[in-house]
Image 1: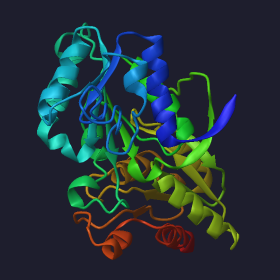
Image 2: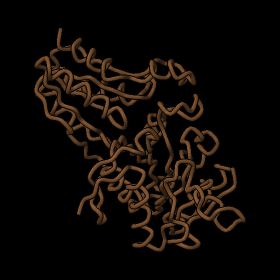
Image 3: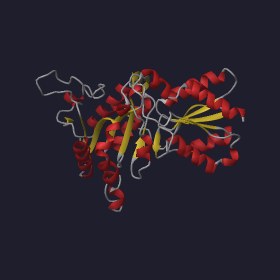
Image 4: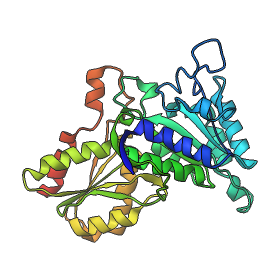
Length: 335
């Protein structure tokens, strides 16, 4: 049975169902229990945006508030995973990765390789990403390319509630470290989500709109901006195919290449800054593998290579819009 619920609720439900199914799953992070057990209101927060609200009393002893030390609790989660547990550590804002990056990229990502495939590190590190929340440069970045660059890490960034639940369940069950990126602007976004548990395999992109004239490849919030652009372009007879990558490592280039072979045109949309971005990566692979199919130059739609502005007016100009995406499609159609 499917219900229309928000991405925030879908993530909460995935955590609840996996903790119920598997006693080795526990969650930890700053304020995820919201002061429960203290003198204040029990379960007051559930994290800064309420994603884990209600789980403390359902799963006693397995929803752990941590000190303000990302290096400590992310390191503890990775150690617990290496010892047979399945921790989910909430990094709050993924921008705080700088404090604990060594534990992720130099330890968790390398254990399986260093120990000849015998070591498993089934840890999930959840964190908010993305601009549009008026949260300034230190809380608004799309840092997905940094994690995607690291061999041994799996990187997930859902665009809707259905995918968020299925991909998080898959992440918790996976035996490798997973960076689970949650776009904070999408938490209220609702879609049909089955009540029962289900998992979405990694490395399978979703063609959210079919089209014959050009291919848009994107992920996260930019899926919605791209769909708005596609609807506007359709009014002038341009039918665009929109591909939601869903996972960035592993990445489903087969679906991308198949689409470009049919449309002959590619627009890569990425909320990350342009240098060494997912958009740049996809563009490079398509140029190498499907160059003869291209009828026009590949277009990239990204923010400028600057920090995310705090000014609301400048932040709105910083984030790619449906209009800028549509202009890029028209540009590639004109050549």
